[in-house]
Length: 68
View 1 (cartoon, rainbow, N blue to C red):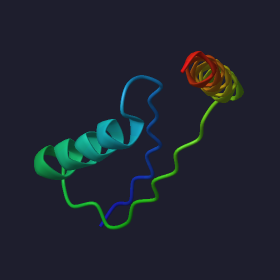
View 2: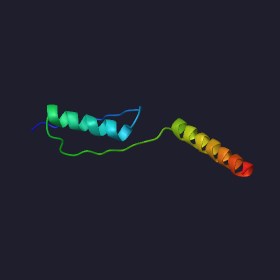
View 3: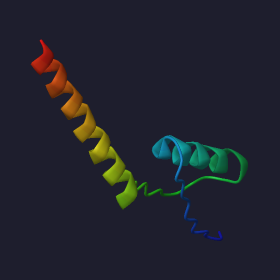
View 4: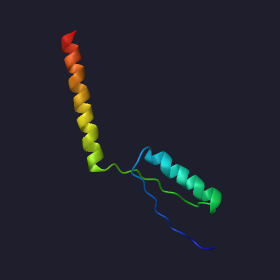
């Protein structure tokens, strides 16, 4: 039996779901997947954006609390 090593990646939307869908598609149309390693890495820019959004949300929450 021949072996194939395949690396997949995605950078949009729900990354985990996209990779799971790709694995299902491959197993249905090409053949059985013997092993799978699913790793999700968040790019530095994504984490910076998330931290900025969290800081802004915290700031707004503090302002609303002061207004009460």
